[in-house]
Image (cartoon, rainbow, N blue to C red; front, side, top):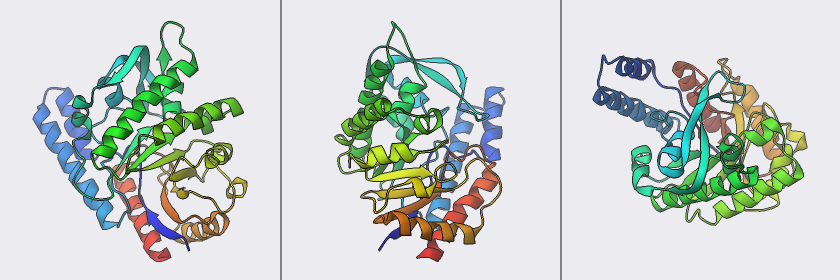
Length: 317
């Protein structure tokens, strides 16, 4: 019998209060202390929201992160911050990482970005997949994609090891690049080898990989053969359930709440789809979640979608 749970992942939208405070700090109307205070309030409210919805795992929403790569870049040597670049086909941007030498991460600096890890079970962290990291980065001195992927793999593996030792229960690697751009058999083999290396560093933490922004069927089938990942995530707005394998050996993250559409999903339709997914995939655990980061939504809408995940999970139990 499949157990039903829920959680969200990735970047969560800032409240209007935090967004305004951030603008006022940029304009010198408020101080950095005011910004930290606003971030702490958003963090406290966000954790309480997840607990109220009885989430299986809880995370911090990256409310103080400039983008998904920046904390890794700023705590590592051998990587610099590049130009402002569009995040896939969304109206959001990131600073493109540039690999320029041997890369090492300074774990002493990580506490500035992962200070919110709290002494509770079921704490999770979302990170970029090394493949996505390499795909969206630049390299100096004629570096190949393979060179960049090797460096990204080493640094993500170090970060996963650090988080596991800090007591994180679940580390999720988000991979939008393969579904979005498509992946050849060769690239999928590079990806699975990279994940296998990272899996060796996960310690007592569970490891998840989530595919979104495109059809993930080929990548899911490729990853399923390795048995290196505890949870595989699928954007079901882009991937057909019929294209996936049956009776999977991994737990499933079902991305069925749209992080890029402000319309609230129908509870009955979500329940029906989850039942269909369980019948097809038969995982030990299925977690319903958002398909992509929620920072594309107004914070008030994101809160409604968080509550909806909790309601659907409760009704299925």
